[in-house]
Length: 89
View 1 (cartoon, rainbow, N blue to C red):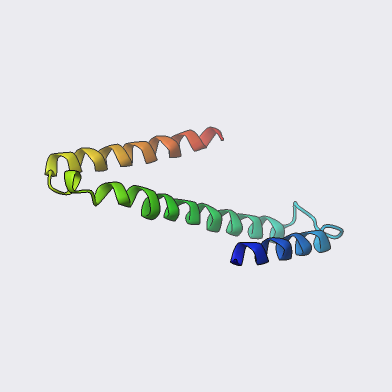
View 2: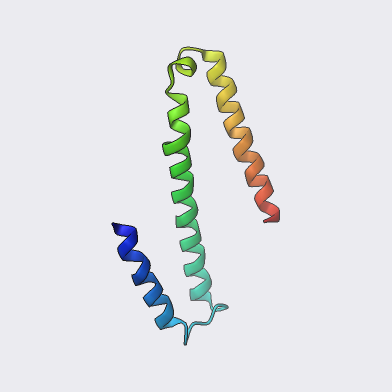
């Protein structure tokens, strides 16, 4: 419900300010950076809490310490490799 309301509002605001918007101004770059950080944070939260957490609460992993350690190591390795890949993105 919230997405269906905020999307048209955001499109309207973007259309309204497009005529006097300077993409190279300090304010525009600051706003873009803040909004990029917020969206990245939401994606990380959804991935870690919504998707990955479900895998770590399964009985097979929660009862096996070695499997927990390997799973966490692989999780951090994958996150690190994706961050390293982001250097070229």
